[in-house]
Structure formats: structure tokens, C-alpha cells
Image 1 (cartoon, protein in one colour):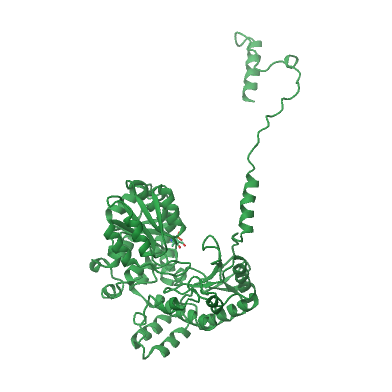
Image 2 (cartoon, rainbow, N blue to C red):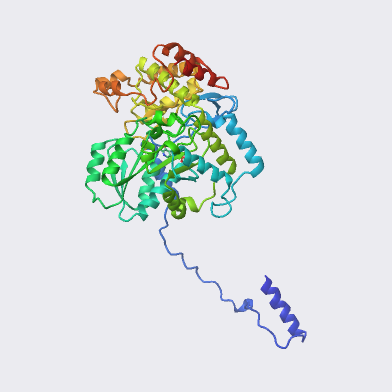
Length: 531
Ligand SMILES: Cc1ncc(COP(=O)(O)O)c(C=O)c1O
């Protein structure tokens, strides 16, 4: 358009003797334009059918019953553990959240977050390198390092990213590195190992003999990482952490321990299972104290890299690693998943730090959570409803069929107002589908009774196998296996829960019947005092 008017203008100027010569128009006159012939047909390219591809992939998920349906669950801060569905007046009780301790609505956490939000705004404004590094990140990383008794810590957008970035970086940088991975490791670790390009050896879940055989098969001088979890979230099993450290020492490996489902939940300060294994040593430091002064030689000290989330028992979002200063600096300097992404918002980091500090000085929530877990497991055992036995706070109920697990979950929601997500393949192996229940301090007796009655109704209506049915078949994944069931001792002992045998039943009853909330600490304190 601009060119046409320029050419016309120039011709006018020439014609009117303003310019010396006429400029030919760039456009041929219409009589010179050849008549259009037959259009050449477009070459027959066989283009990729993107939509067809998506639909085929989705069809596969529908066919094998692993297609994921999301429920619209709006957890209410003032009514924990209740939520509303898409309609505000449609209330349900949430029984499968990983906000294990209700810290997502803790008044101290919310106050810190409100104040930080008002002062520093919504987002961090950049990556850690470019304008997104601030006092909140510094303070949070110091709190995390102190909690785990490590020299340093590094915060990521999530623990998925922390695991992926750390394993990918170490596995690709350590020369000829081999990563030994527990067969039930979380997708974030599996992905990190894949991204590293390092050789991977999968050892049988929690199997020290298999792990040792695999370690022994490798040359001593080769760098090795043993990657495992403390609490395995879908079955609640717990790793033999100390024995894995022994093997690591023996074969010159380093240990990478994911404590995602244990931080906030175990140990006198909520540092996880590794801390819990030296309960008395760490408890002697007093509430809220840094783990550093008494760390030497403990299990937590022996672990090289601990990873955790800020998004489960601490109720916020984000993930981290805690390790030696040089390892943390290496990941800080080399891991793209840390370097090239916006930092967590200031309010989130400040809130998470408040949550960690709160749980480091107050044990009431996690003790009450354990007591509620025991109560649910006992009630279900009485009804012959098949809980996969484990020593942790997870209550996995075996269904054993993807379609039935989904039906059970739908029925609980629509007929009983109880939300428990079905866990299907690939999160668990086919045939091991389950309902995964996570009690919290807020799940008092009234809620627990509702749950147990609802499960009873669903088990009857859908004719789902009971523990005795599994037993008759010789047992499955620990259900109906007599010696397994009698062997499992909870990680939190009676003594650690503040329950002495002579006062156990009254104190337990009182604690279990009490509402959570502001008065709850007094009840737990009473239980502890009675013991
Ligand atoms: C064992 C384990 N590791 C890591 C993660 C990822 O943690 P985040 O939710 O912080 O990404 C999860 C999440 O469920 C997990 O179960």
C-alpha cells in the first residue's frame, strides 16, 4: 500500500516535471498480465494427524481404565477437612489430601503469608539469578538446612523438579555414574534418572540383598547413587534407611533420600524418618532447635542428599534438597531445572518457613495424626476391610481392580459425601488398585465413624474382597498374610506418642474424640503429661 502510493506520487511528480525521469510502476498494466491457466494442484503430502494421535492415546487410557477424572474439590480453610464441590453448598469430607496436618489453613502460616503478600506482592519477579533471589529464599534455605542438619539447602518450584533436576545433573556430570533405584520410586526420580542418561539399576523394593548384589556387581571406583524414599506414599512402606547407609558406605555410594511424605510427620522436629530413627538424640535438643549440633553419626547425618516438599505436611508448595555446601552449590550452578525458572513467590516461601518452624517446635499435630491413623486402621481391621499393612500414616485399602476402584470412589462421593480418589495404574501396578486414605488431626471420631460406615456400605454394594477373602487366596501385597500383619510396628511408638500403657485407653479415647482446632494442643499436652 505504502509502495503504491509512493510510486503514484513519484509518477505524478515526474509528469509535473518535478522529478527528472518517469519511474516505471512496479505493477504491470492489466493488459500485460497473462490469463490464469489451470492451477497447479498441491503436492499430495501425507500430513500427520495430530488430533487422531491424541484421541488414540486417550482411547488407550479409557480402555485400560487408567484415564484420570478430576474432581472439583475446594478445600475450605475454615472447615478443614471439609470442602465444597463445584456448587458452594455441596459439602464433602476430604479423606485423601496430602495436607496431612492441616497446615494449609494454619493461622500462623496464613498470617505470615498475608503480611508478606501485602509487602512484597504476588510473584518473585524473576529467576534466582535475575531479580528473584531475596531474603525469603535465604531464610527458608537456612531453616531447611538447619532442620536436616546439613550445610546447605536449595529450594525448587516443587520436589518433582528438585528430584528430576538433582538426579539428572548428578547422573550426567559424575563420570560413568550408575544410579541404583528402588523399584517403587516416584516418577520424579525415575524421570531424573532418565534425563541424566546414566546407567540405572533397579533393585527390588526395600530389598537389601538385591541392592547389595547390584552394588557388588559394579567396579568400586565407579560413582554410584542409591535413590530411594523413606515413606512410600501409595503403600505406606518405610525404607530400611540405616541399612542402606551401611551398604552405601561399604560400596562407596552416595545416598539420595526422598522424604517427601515424611517431612513434618516424623521426628521430634518433623525432619522426617531419618530424624525419627534417632528420636531421643534429636528430642534432647528441645523443641524448634536446629539439628546441627547433635548430628554426628546419626542416620540423618549419614544421608548425603535429602529431598522434601513444602506442599504436603507443611501445607504450601515447593520442593528442596538439603546436602553438603559443595553439592548444593554444584546443583545451584549446573541444574537447568533450578536456574531457568521463576523463584517461588515471597509469600509462599515465608509461609513455608513458618510452617516448618511451627512443626519443629510443636509435635501435637503429627501425634494426633498418628493416633487418628491408628484408630482408622483398627476400625477397618474390625470390619475385615483390607488395609495394606504398613508402619506409617498412610491407609491404603486394597480393591484390586481399576474399574471397581473408580466405582467405589464415585459411590463414596455421590452417596456418602466422602472424597477418596481411586489410585490406579500407572501410579500402582495393575491388579493392585486401591483407595488411599490419609487421616489428619481434623478427622475426629465423628468423621471416622462416617468413613468406616461408608466404606462398609460400598464394600457390600460392590461386593469387594475383604481381608479374609485375600487370606483364603494366600494373601496379596501383604493383605491376608498373617506373619506380615503381625510384624508391622508403627514408626511412632506408644512412648513417642506420649501414651503409657496404664493410661493408654482413657487418654487415647479423649484425644481421639476431641475436635482439632485451637484447643487441640492442650489435649495432646494432657495426653503427654499423663504419660
Ligand atoms: C515420593 C514423592 N516424591 C516427590 C514428589 C513431588 O513432590 P511435589 O508435589 O513437591 O512436586 C511426590 C509427589 O507426590 C512424591 O510422592
